[in-house]
Length: 384
Image (tube, rainbow, N blue to C red; front, side, top):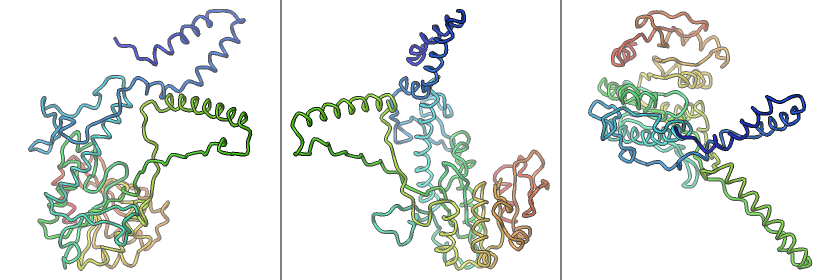
């Protein structure tokens, strides 16, 4: 059995605590002091000292994984599914590894949207300057010119990006379960134009600039002896700060800041922006939305802000486990009435597919998603 460095550091303290607790009242003061010491120890930071470097591959091949012909992620050598607990007792490191793999999969899905689904990647804001932060959406060639039907897909919150429903399903199940690709292909086969939103791509992360403090010793009017003392104190402070930083951030993780994307700083803003700059320009007589989880909330917010336009252009909305709330979002009576007639929310339930599920909200019908396959639910949505 291996013993971590953090355990070795804490072991003498625990032993001392045990010995003191066996003593009499005269040991109370020592107990209080030790408890105070323990309260000051950041166990999460101590655990970082035991970690291997947070240096992960940037390709699937580097991770020794690949998607097989069934769209399942499998180890290249063993054929086994993805293993989260790659290193025992190092949850934080395993989580970072999982996140690094997730970023690779996000890029992989982007490639599939372009190569397998023949979608175009469109940069936004449409009038962005060369230097400002940008995001993007995906559209079919006929998204704006198809005169009949347009399908708009909105995923939920979290780490997922355009083309994904759930990263966990992509990694643990398969691409068909976790991505929007089956919906996109089915829609295009049925004659729809397609727009895929990217509502979680709200900012870019850049490394925080280092703040350089000018040394007070640069003041030439100070006596040399005083400047030397200040330099000595400054060096000592820097030494202590560097020592603390080494303890606080042993992995040398970069500290970043977020630069938000203009008019796309939230999923709700993004939905309104894509509506104003793309969907309203489409020639389609009938626009259909498929929105999952927080995507449903973003759609309701879009409707609140563009009610008349949405009513004139959108034919139907298929929601899946939508987290919208017409009360909290203050959706008016006319919006709630429209949703009752034009929306349906398929929710997780053990009941058979399409069985009515009771709702406390006076908006769209809620029905069971049942235990059906994705293709069966898709069929229901396309003919909703």
